[in-house]
Length: 322
DNA sequence: AACTGTGTCAACCGCTTGATG
DNA sequence: ACATCAAGCGGTTGACACAGT
Image 1 (spheres, helix red, strand yellow):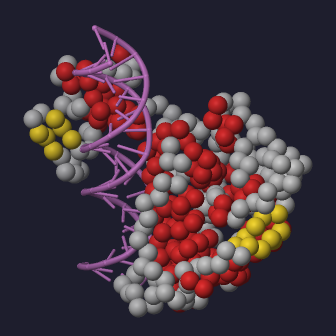
Image 2 (cartoon, protein in one colour):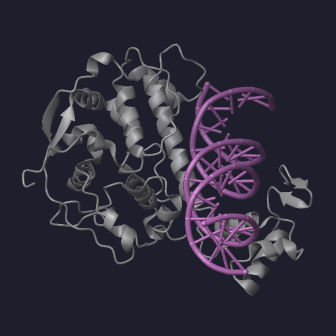
Image 3 (cartoon, helix red, strand yellow):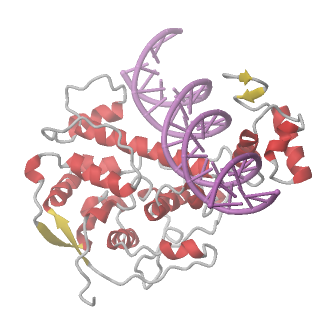
């Protein structure tokens, strides 16, 4: 299929043909992955240098995981690194062997769309119609309706902090919730936030780590390969605003937790799991330890649809030692 | 079977950055 | 210092496949 092929003044656009790929590969074999513009100037291809480079980087480069969905582990890495670096897809991609910035970007974009849709469906007035998704309809019916929910517009999010802030505001949109009163809760209470079936000490330690904001990935920036996270300072208490408390109550609703349960859990093909040099969350006497590898009962997908910085909304108490 | 909504992916565009003259 | 160009990056778009109605 040719798709929308455009040729304007000898510049060819649109899907690549196998013959073009072959020419491009041969060029790279001869000259290396550079001098992209010379491909056209030599009359080898009617493509811009930009287009050639992109094709090589995203599709033809060796060792790419083409046509291979993101594993739960990769998803987790993306989520955590996005929280750390923001939308620095190229940078994040360097932590994911075989993945391109485009892959990461697409993965994140899909996830954002899905999250936005979930939120929209959970908060939209019942009068809204036309959704053909039975899942969405079910959510609309079974999640308690919140009054005065604004029409959700997919936000342009530059950071997941904004995302979760928006999430919180959206979920607790009634103005009566907007109270700055804070309450201290213990981290151990967080299991209420998630599907109880998914709760494990390791997961909660991860949540705690995320919430405390002592993210070890900052250190990874300098030296990803040799990176080993520092041990975060234990800090078992978080503050939680009333709106968050209310959200907590909603999480108690089994259908609300369902919202954050994996929708399309990537297959955990343990027989095909590539052991990539993913960044390892903290391992320190069980604090932040990852135990999935040892405990197949813990789904990686736990983190897949769960914003990594979900608890950024909850500010940690000042560290008494400081 | 036709239609619709959704997810995924490839590719393009505009902008920025860095090297070079 | 400035201009130019190649390369890189992030945002966006459109095509396609698939599932549900």
